[in-house]
Length: 259
Image (cartoon, rainbow, N blue to C red; front, side, top):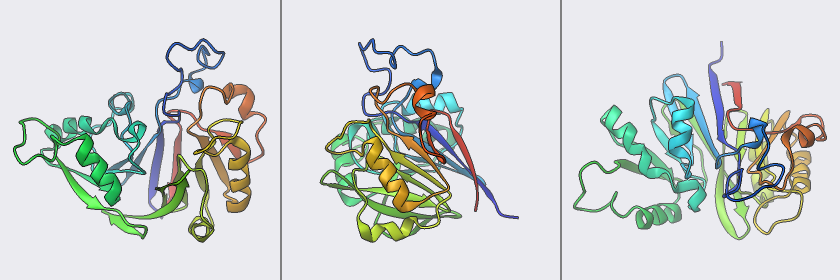
C-alpha cells in the first residue's frame, strides 16, 4: 500500500494578509474564517518527516495554530519578505530538537537570507540565535529523507523563483508565468496550488483569468487558488462561481495524497 503524505495550507493570503490593516471592506470584515488569510506557506508531513515551504511573517502563529512539534527542513520559493520574515522562529525547533534546521534555497535567496539574518551566519554567534544548515537548491530533483522533490522554475514578473512538485501535488505561489519548457514537469498532476491574486491584472502575479488559463494548460484533477488579496471577493460567493475542479484555498485546508 502506498504511503500517505499530508499537505496543510498554513496561509493563503497575499503579502499584506487578509484582513488588511485598517481596511473595512466586506472581505476584511467577514465573519467567515475562510476569508481570514495569513501569508502563504505549506506544511508537508510524510512518515516522520515535517517540512515547510516558506516562513513568512506569520510563521510563529502558523506553527502554534497547527500545533507543529517538529520541523526537519524549510524550502524557500524566493526571498521576498512575506516568504522569509519568520525564519528566526525556527530557533524554537532548534531548542526542542537540539539540532540545526535544514534550509533549502537558491544562491540568490541564500545571499538575501545572509543579509537579512546576518546574526545567524556571523562568526561570533550570539547565544540562542537560530541554527540552520544551508543547502543549495537547483532546478533539478533532490531528496529530503524519503521524499523526492522536483523544483519548477516559474517567473514572478522578471524574478525567477521556484515552485515545487512532490508526487502528484504541485505548489506554485507568486507566479506570473510558467515557462513553456517547465510545463512537462506538471504533467499528470492530481492537485495544483496556484496563485490567483485578484481579478484585475497585476504585474507580478497571475490574475484569476490567467490562473484559469494555466489550469487549462496543466489540466490537474483539482486546483486550489492561493495568494489571494482582499479584492478577490468573499470565499463563499466566489468559490461557487469557479469551474468544476477549481476551488479557492483557505488557511488550514488539508490535502491527503498517496505516494
